[in-house]
Image 1 (cartoon, rainbow, N blue to C red):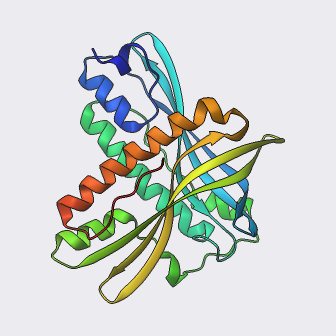
Image 2 (cartoon, rainbow, N blue to C red):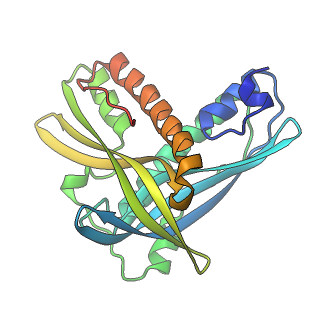
Length: 238
């Protein structure tokens, strides 16, 4: 039995898979949250919506809960449009579902609802912004590289302060983001992913955990880059 299974709570999909591979009994449930967040990026302040999935259940006899950010959408041109973000979130979500099912972890396969988003925020209109890479994910570019095409990815890391608005409460959060600038097939694309976050007023305790989670996710992604011969320079959070 691993240290994770016996002593530590899981923080990632990978942790759940490692636990069941170590012989643990696991239950897994999902709860979706779409949270308005005020971001400050340099001198620019803007509001976006982050698409979160809370994973909870029991490993052995111990309860666990963690959340994962699947996309960030804006009703402006500062990040992928909200309607695009829903589709991006669902593509990443379905990948995680498949990983869990392949490992033998059963759960109800729910997805984020585009219709619900457009009803809730009726001023949001779907659009296609060429600078965001449409609804492609980083794994689409990995597949393009596997087909023998040259793919160059500039990987830039950012730590961005923000304020989450949820259930009439405000919580200061700090997000660890990765920005991908991609060149392939005569086209430039750009988009971001959230790798981890921590509560700002609990930085001393939570930042090291969030940094480890973000760096572990980067390591897995960079391994996929290497396997597909994507051209990039690895970088990690300090």
